[in-house]
Length: 324
Image (cartoon, rainbow, N blue to C red):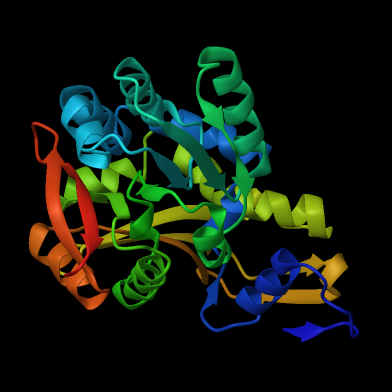
């Protein structure tokens, strides 16, 4: 693997693609699955029969919506609802409608890495719920966390849904939660979804559907490299592969090269060599139980106030505050 010539790397995407594909073993970040095509593929994933996560969290919201919004602002003093990784906001709309119905004083501030997702969500909410004050922002979690304290003087309820925390291994999850804690005032709350440990086959099926949508989603990172960095990945020469370790609760996604091959990425002046069956690690999806969440919270200066579960206990949303 070698660089054809020196090139100034100017974007985070270029920098991280270069770092990941010149490392051993190779890796690429799952955040780069998402563009207009990736957003559409993820919408399809959420509708798949195998992908239980979205349905389970949606069930929690429908079943417990009154109790959830009451826990956000018991004294009805007003607050900012800040959602990290907002996506299409489908589940959040259940809570927004409940907040409107009970005349809470709130502003909704969705944040996502995908400009396409935020633009679509803001436009959709302006059409569906004109009464909601929506202020969308584009950015990564860690960048936005540094700005959170300056967004507003009001109480903040920070939501991280869809078990997005599961994209981080425990040490980095604690780092993220510590930053989150440091951005909070004493009355602020965190409302966060954690996918629970369950039958290993149920987990594997969720990330390796029979129709191949998840495989296409995983490969979209290669499509983006081809399109945006003038790469020449042949997607047919890579397969999507999923593994799950029930001991650690870690599901991992890979793209595996089916033959020895060379890929050129012209905008990086980079030549990437693959051996047959060499992998690119693209994503982790961590699974939890109450003890793990309690430990993560304690290590991060937070504590659990309460939790809400679906009827199968596949999934839980936890309400957290700064530890006293």
